[in-house]
Image (cartoon, rainbow, N blue to C red):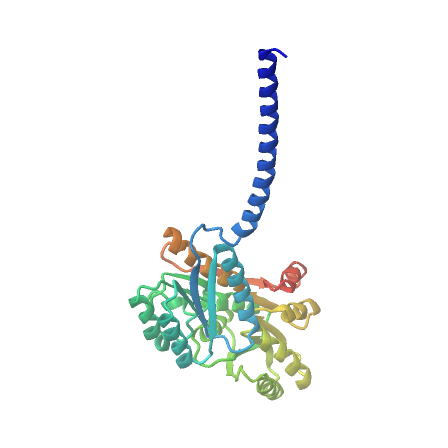
Length: 333
């Protein structure tokens, strides 16, 4: 073989080996990229892990806040975030939980504030320590006063007015508005809004929301005593379900309507036991709180232009229940 031929053969072999090596590298690189992509779903923001504390006023076992946490979990997974969750329906004890969270020095605090006067001092400790705060679900009217830079939730007065206007349109007579936690500002705002939007008789009744047996007996008694009640407006899904039971036992013909949902409540709308629900999309409240805190810390992003970001209200009724049911089964509505 001539020198020229040998050189050409060597070049051909080298090219073949280079191609083979490139092919192997491409295959290996693709596998690494897929693996990185799977991890990238958790580390999408390309930064170190962030640690948040979420503190809410939810009572133990509250199904509404389960939906909020599902949204928060999804956002945490997408943004490389770990968060601790604590809750207490008593404002004094919730304030202690907030102070404990501040002492743990998280990167950010996410909080619902149903009693601003009681919780503001604890939240101000976070602000003074340089810990950013995002509010959600409760405390919209005063979130800037107690130190949150963003807020995700529903304007309860607007939601109440929309519910009241619908009751008026449907020809309601007397409305019983059931408050499960006396003194919580967002619940009072709902019933006030219903009264404004309805323009007819609305009676508030306070019940002990942590004791559904007591709620049922109180509503049974009230429905027996006052047959003029045409509609019972509850402020949470568990209380609507309890009102359905109370209505049956009392032999009442009142229509049950409610704020907020869970999977069981959605089934009751489908069956007609509950006429409709006002939905504030709690999944979004949890998701956006975590997501925007992460974006703020990593990019300096904020949302809302200095105003709250509204996640509701919208209505769930027989017209859209089929679509909503599929999401409720997944725990996101």
